Image 1 (cartoon, rainbow, N blue to C red):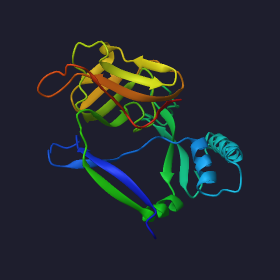
Image 2 (cartoon, helix red, strand yellow; image 1 turned 90 degrees about the vertical axis):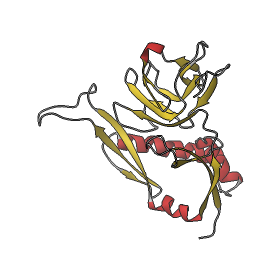
Image 3 (cartoon, rainbow, N blue to C red; image 1 turned 30 degrees about the horizontal axis):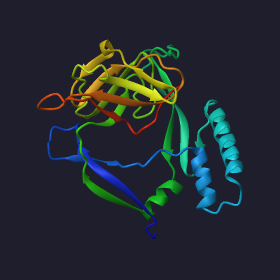
Image 4 (cartoon, rainbow, N blue to C red; image 1 turned 180 degrees about the horizontal axis):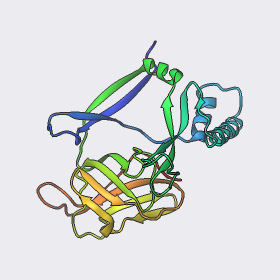
Length: 240
């Protein structure tokens, strides 16, 4: 297949191993697109024969109905991706019932054959080693096990990356959850683990919606920075 796309990546230190010489690649994303953005692109670039507004309306109707069916236990395979409900957690006896304090219900999405086929037209360009002065590589919901996805208020979130340790006396230092409504700071006493490559925090009480996790710190290997630096994770996290 002819090359049509190019994905750019930076290399980051692999904090999951002890070797100082291996790296992981992370896609350098310009921004996150929503349904409206994709529909507008389909019209202006892809030559769709309906308006962007009509396509967005139809897409939202589809996703709403898909969610309704997923909630009834059906799996959905669009060809582009498949989705299904998944229960996480341990049941200690055959008679034990689902308990929201021990178990979690979520949806799993997997790329489908049509989307995998598109990869044949993509090249990957490595831009070199990133300036990893401060970076977030991954966040894990300790309760559900989901990665870069769900937030469970009052439960632990593990954040891995580079130079994440919260250090310094600037009042801005800390872990935040941000959205259009503002930023919510994690209470310093709710930072359970505070290491350069790993933070474990208690997620504050958050309303349902989408958030980005941000970290502000003066940490540096040799000495504290004069002014704090902030990094924002590029994945959108959701409170259901």
